[in-house]
Length: 153
Image 1 (tube, rainbow, N blue to C red):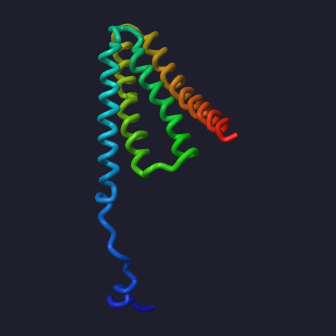
Image 2 (cartoon, rainbow, N blue to C red):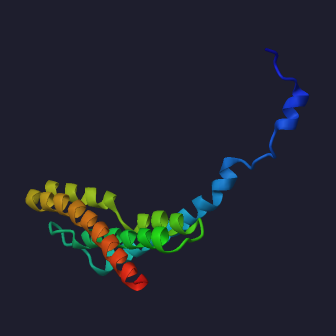
Image 3 (cartoon, rainbow, N blue to C red):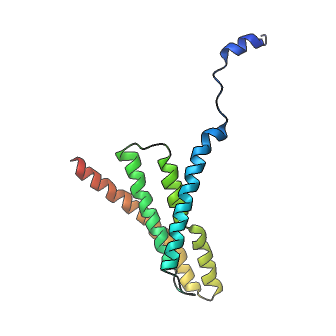
């Protein structure tokens, strides 16, 4: 078998593609913008409803549960109801809701509670947050599907 020459390879080449970073730049931009908006909303919630030292971190808990419920609705709507622009999912799902929900603050809150002698509250928070957040996603997706099915009937 012989090696193909440069002339025959030249005719097989497709049109040049832009670099990967150039194709991904719009996604990075919308995720960053959405993340900033979501993080700002979370910060505002923490200012409006501050958590008292040693108390159950209700604000972070409800931010995470609400964000998870919204992602349940959002994913049903964009996957089962209508098609959306390719940047909507990274902007809202990854950016806004990713910036809004805060499992890193959840981890810090647990550590603060345990270090502050509130191990029982910390353990309750440790268990309750993922359980209620995952339930919120499931219930929101289920309810959204039911509502959409009633509309279509």
